[in-house]
Amino acid sequence: MNEIDKKILTIVQAQGHISYAELGKEVGLSVSAINERLKKLENKSIIKGWGARIDAKAVGLEVLAFIFLQHEKPIYEESFRQEMLKLGEVEECHHVTGEWSYLLKIRERTISDLEKFISAKIRSSKGIVRTQTVIVLSSPKEWSPYIVE
Image (tube, rainbow, N blue to C red; front, side):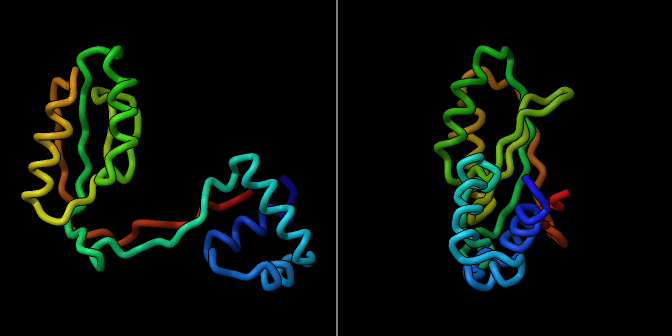
């Protein structure tokens, strides 16, 4: 990855809707060269996908929570990971160090929905011995583009 690729990544993170012509003008490349570079960055999985950042509250997802959980044994973790990939409420799933096995970022409409999710999808999952849920009061900063150096 060279300096132009880094500049392209910086721009498309902040302006995902930018046209190839505008992007090319900013980095000094033709539309076809931009198209080729973006395809290469996608093929290398540097760009993992394209989409819009949506305001969760604007679409009714009022509750944000983080759930720490601990597995009894590592043997249960693969099926757990596969299940988490299927659940739309799970915005992020991280395997972590320390006393916990995983950290989940969950979005729900209501506290009641969060409670149902924890009971039905988390605590009922095989091998989970304990959980701790932290409910977010506010989020002054939720996203930032990566600094590509």
